[in-house]
Structures are given as structure tokens and as C-alpha cells.
Figure (spheres, rainbow, N blue to C red):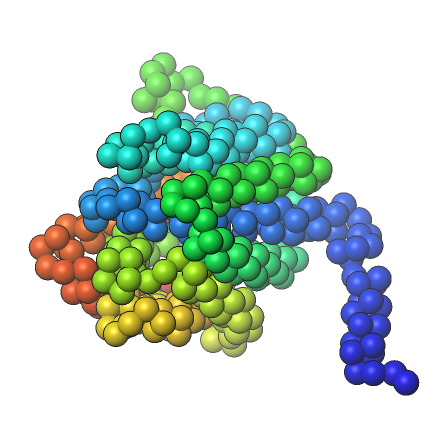
Length: 426
């Protein structure tokens, strides 16, 4: 007798046999499959060291200002070095190799964070971790623009939105599973060995993504003819000139930069509020990540479909208004279990912000010079990542963490007003 489970498995098997993921028809299909594998491994670090490093600092007794610098210091370094990093990336035609070479050094920073508690005195450990996390930005400023150049060539514009949506959903699923698993693990092992193990697993598994990324095949990047500027500053100005003269991109940055600052205001406050105010255990913090990333998957599906009907500007505006509730609801949470439904609010709304900002940014960029425009876009984002957490930390020191979270949510609502200047759709 055929059971519903057997029918479902049979249907799944037939789908797997026919899908281009298992049976790629061409190089683009193979590139897509490799990008999916790459994204899944990145999800491990997102649910591991990236989710729990700030929590580790909070449990070590770090101040709000120092936790803020965990985000702001790398952002400041990126602001200064992203353009030089893009110039380095554009020297080479093989952008896949450039990205893998430099990202290997980024992942080494994860291993150093895992080793630090064994060799650095506890009173200096928070500062050492912030320093390690900041220094990994040096190779990252080359890896980011080279990765963007690969993405622009690996998948055709016709399929890019679909594949990116699947990638983001996969990233959210793996991050959700990793967050739950790592949160449980942290409560089973003695401190600080528990965090060291999580950080090392994040390093080991995320490093495997280099193996898959190396097999992506793309057209080589054309080397640009350099001008005759005599000074370093002259060459720098010549390199940036296309950005300053491309009005759609400048308008996009002007309309979104203040919102990005407001979005990053509460960044250092969440982990401090969870640990110090709500006394949340690591298992619950891990489950909070699972719920949030699970909601991201649903959010990407919902907002992705609504974008075609409503337009990307409405999607960005409505989801940003919803995301402003996240810090406010966190501040109003009476106990730690309330973090779970609040995380669902974050996941559903953050997905719409991701889709709206990313697609509108792509529409505002020319079809060439991806390393340059990606570097400037990342530079503007990092300027907000630098300023926002420090302002949030200062605000919490002047008031309370809960009050600062509420003010941050209101600021996000106010900073959606410039979105009215963006195009209705892409």
C-alpha cells in the first residue's frame, strides 16, 4: 500500500532528478549550484561566530561602547580602504582567484578568535577580540568587490533575482539551524571553551566554501586603462570620477544613508539587553536566531512576490516601517522567552529591507565597473555601520539600554521619509 510519505518522497526524488541543481544543463547552472553550496557554508559562520561573538563579549563584561566598536571599528577601516581594495581587485582578470585568496585571510580571523581565550588574559580578552575582528577587514576590502564582480558574471541578469532569492533563503535556513545548534552547544560546555569550539567550527566549515567558489567559471575582468595622473590622490580622484557623475547611484545613496545609520543605532545594544537585562541563556539566544532566520525565509518569499505588484520602493518603505518595531518590541519584552516572537518580526521585515535596498541599488548602478560601484556602496554602508553603533552606545550611556532601543526604532521610522525620492520600481 502506498502511503502519503512514500508518495511525497517519490515526488521529491523525481524533482531532484530533473532539477538543474543536480543535473546542470550549462555553465550557468553549474555556477548556480556552486553558489548555493558556497552560501550554505557561509550560513554556518552567520549562525556561529557572527551571531555569538557580541554575546561572548557581553558575558565577558564588555561595556556598551566596546561592543559598539566590535561593529564600528571594522566599518571605519572599511571606509578608509574599500576604494584602494577595489583598485587592487581590478588589477587582476581572475576575480574568482582574487576573492578566494583574500577571503582565506578573513577566515583566519575566525581561528584567531577561537584561540584568543587560551593565550590572552581575561581582562584584556574583550579588547583583543575587537582588534582581531577589526584586522580581518584588511583582506575583506579586496574580497568584497571581487565577489561582486564574480556575481555579476556568474549568473545572467535574467536569472539573478531568482537565484539570489534562493541563496538568501538557503542562507537563512542554514543560519537558523546553526544558531540553534550552537546555542544548545554553548549551554553544554564550560565557559569559555564553549565559545572557542563554536568559533573554531565556524572557521573550519566556512573555509570549505573556498573549494566550491574556486570552481565557478566566469569571463575574465577587463583591465582598465589607467590615466596619467601624477600623484596617488590624482589617480584616486580619476578612479572615483565615474561614481560622482552617475546621478542615479548618487541619488540612491543620498536617500538611504540616514536610514542605514538609524538601522545600526541599536546594533551593540541587543546582546547587552538579552544578557544583562533579560538574563537569557545561550540556548534561548540560539533559538531566537533560529526563529529569526526561519522568518527570513518566509519574508524573502513574501516580499519577493509583492515586489512585482507593489514596486520595490513600497516594499522597502513598508518593510522598513515594520523593522522599526524590532528594537521597540525588544525593549518592551518582559522576559527572555518574548525574544522568540520578536525575532520573527525581525526576520519577516528585514527580508523586505534586504530585497528593496539590494534591487534598488543594482538598478542605480551601470552595467560595468562592478568592483568600483560595489566598493562605494559598501563604503557608504560601512560609514553607517561605524556611526550608528557608537551613537547607540552613547545614547544608552546617557539614558538606558531599553530607552535607547525605543529611540532607535523611532529614528528608523523617521528616516524612511527620504525613500519617497527613489524610483517606484526597478
